[in-house]
Length: 277
Image (tube, rainbow, N blue to C red; front, side, top):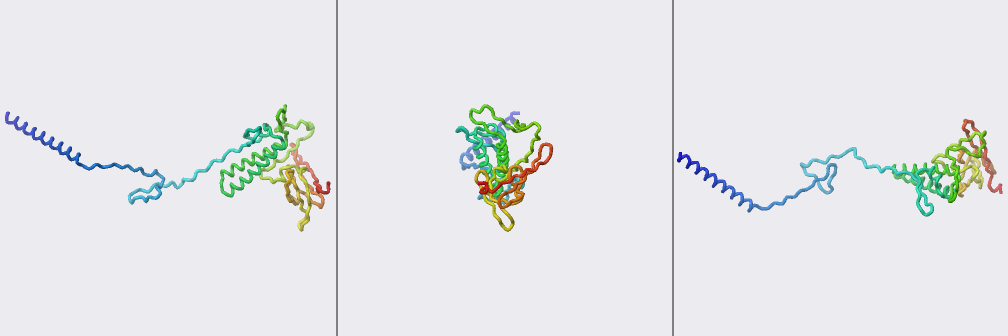
């Protein structure tokens, strides 16, 4: 028994010596080993390509989204902005502008016509650049200012100190006889020309010219702009057209319906302005 115990003690001593030697060897090797620097590189996000770097031979190619398209800029909202009393005022609709603006009738009409012209130029520029968002916004502004121009013809704007302003939108004309059937005038299209946005009675004929194709007339709008017209051309804000041109007069025909559907023909004669003088 004693001999067996001695053998076990010898084996245990050898194991302890071997373990201690191995531990000291690992400490010595770790102390003398060169220090290493760890560098971490972030790869490019999925779906992107690093410019100026060629991919490695074993590097997988970044996935390409074939359906990816450039984001379209959303179209804005058309509003009417004016300066009244030194402050900027914004109206979200034509009805709101016509009902609440403090601009005079003349100033309001001039402002609307100016903005309408700017919107048309913006639409042409957007179409030439294929800018769908800008074209959509310009068309909205044309519709908005065109509607405001139409409403301005049917009301008298309020001014400072006005007690009451009659706004006839969707109302019956209080000065019309109860036995008279109201007339239904066609709306002015947004793309109408300058001669189709004013009443025929406000157009002036300044000259009538003769050419091989017949007479042509030189007409002026209330803002002083001149336009050459011929037979069959649409004029006036009620859908009229030039029926005939003579050496001294321009004859305009308008077809006006009432709410019962009956059509009434209205003939307007515009004399040569020099002849009237």
